Length: 192
Image (cartoon, rainbow, N blue to C red):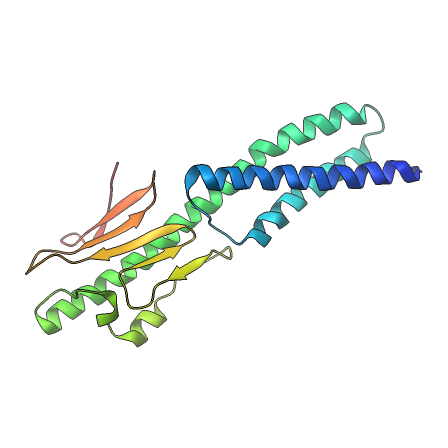
């Protein structure tokens, strides 16, 4: 295929614009959901990859490139949002796995000391450090070491202890996804 220099400039502009458009969609989804599951560079990489795949299709289509470009831009919207939703789901599952790993440590502390820990920093630090969420994506992790919560891919893992022998609350969630730990069943109960 012999393409003019202006075609390549238009194709490059298409890739840049579609990357920006998809990244803007991701940022809009982040604002709407309150979850920032991965680093901005990963979001930019996904947006750029979608744009490059669209540009590749444009290279293969000899006619009606403008219509195909519009169609690909429209098609990239749901594809980008499906990818983003998948990242949020993975972050939620990673946070639940992390919280499920905390629960036995909390129970062990109670059996040894006869009370629930007030804060997570009362748990053995080497065991806390060894407890890491399983990640397939580079999820953003934020921890306030020694306090009662962590954020895994935008999903909050929270622990709070009431007075006396009141069972503590171990919670994983965000606005529309949340689970509370069931101490008797040693499993998560979804909250709706």
